[in-house]
Image (cartoon, rainbow, N blue to C red; front, top):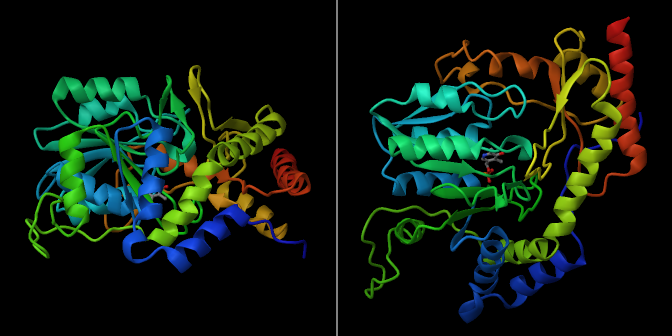
Length: 373
Ligand SMILES: *Cc1c(COP(=O)(O)O)cnc(C)c1O
């Protein structure tokens, strides 16, 4: 068996270790929030937003943000069918209903025309998920949001480093949410960030994040509402600070890996597309992905078998959320229900070697050849 190639693995240097050890040794008492405040400050500055709250996960950041927007029982929230479930769960937990619409064939992100068609009097928000670092059509989505008076939320969990018309992913919506899970470009093990430019929303989420205790409340242990407990620890934030000092390096390496794959795979006959980077955008390249054409005969099963035989950990493209048993099937979301059958995510961790990248390329070239007979 050849050595295993993982699809993702964090890049942890001596800097992360030093900061984490310092937080573990000294980050208590008066200093228990030091790394958290610093991490929030670095992230705010990087994103170009006014407010940031470090959280225990992106899911938690979304949950609190949606709760603060007043999303509740009977409400509808429009999002793309192709997605990780973490975007839908908070909607369900709040008693609202995710409305799954189809994606665009090139960006694999939500189709703005279908968003507009799906709006009802109960629509409370639209969630723009920048899938794999690819950018949603934010101009269109924000215009629709303005036209109907519906806030646009950005789930930028996969889009650290992505830039749309000069603005960073996550900084354009009513609020943005990020993930620092171990598989993401920037990691704290588990963790997330809520960001916004809206002072009232920030204040509300800050209170919610602290078990409903307002920062202006002078009485101790005095909640003014039922809140949440989705905080990041100082030790996690210490790792986050080190990762923020290396953010350009982390994102550039992701982009370099995508470029390497693109150069060798995008022009192959049978390859229908890879992560796009339209004019005036930067793709943070979290997850290099290859989509094969229907004509190619390449299927998910064949891809999984071929990668498994080479001991390479390639990942399936997201299943449509509406195909899961807890939701109603939306089989007329034709692209979402079809694209995963002929797509694969390729390994892209920071330290992946040229030799390992070549092994991945060889699998794709071989499978394509075998499918064409
Ligand atoms: C990873 C991810 C999340 C969840 O992040 P957690 O930090 O694990 O809660 C949410 N949305 C998308 C699009 C993701 O990729």
